[in-house]
Length: 84
Image (cartoon, rainbow, N blue to C red; front, side):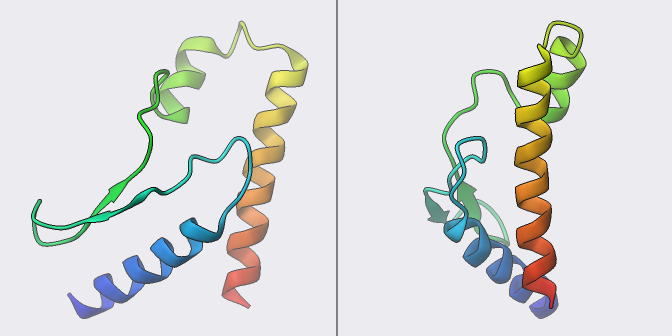
């Protein structure tokens, strides 16, 4: 359990540092909802990315798709740099 908590703490720390218009900000952390802390973020009207893409992929413009890829690239780069 300690390993899980340490990993979660690293993820929370990283998420707080992310700044990108297409990455949901982490507003905070709350406890009392189970054995692990709850991560608090804004409500996403369109849901998570996977569900949004399932519903909207055919309607997205080239520019919207590119913006999503750029956002994922940003997040992947940050995660890779963190692991160095």
